[in-house]
Image 1: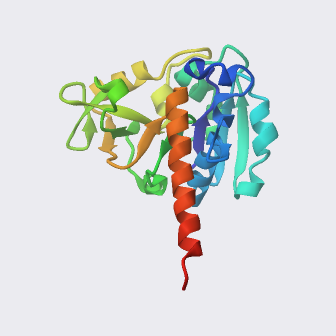
Image 2 (image 1 turned 45 degrees about the vertical axis):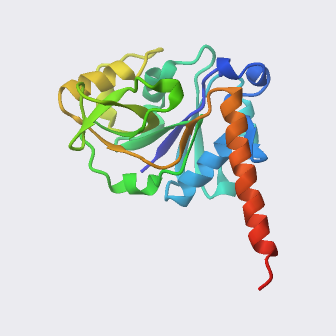
Length: 232
């Protein structure tokens, strides 16, 4: 299964950091956010990656190259600016993603979700990973009932992780458009499955959350160094 990382956004809430650096290249734990995601995906069995490019997008391939140093092959889907929104960006990249179901991950999340389990996940039109609602998004996005995403019930937050069939985009035209209306149409038809991830997840959409993730990684690294220094 191929995986796509959405990396074309402007990152308005992270300005002025994103005035000269694309959001996926902002650092946490001493490394760009997108490198953490690439390594997680590769470690879980995803070795063919597609990354879309928008704001300051040329800097991302300059950093990641062809992916070989991560054990991956990276193809890039340039969109120019303004970018094509989530739906338009995925549709634009379909020739690179191929005819089979593919994983899409937002480039501005941090998560401990085991991506590899999605490789064998049965998919009708889409399969979404949801998380408990964080304080900054208490209303949530989608209800979940017996493994199906629905339109009624207690809403959970979309984690920015989904598996999609290319058929979800049937009838779409090139250009900018959101993903949500396509998902809601498929949900209404009962064709979107889902699951609730109860582990770590963070939407790194603000400077405060970027700092929080950086502090989390710094604490983990300090703990690892302490363990290594313990006498045998």
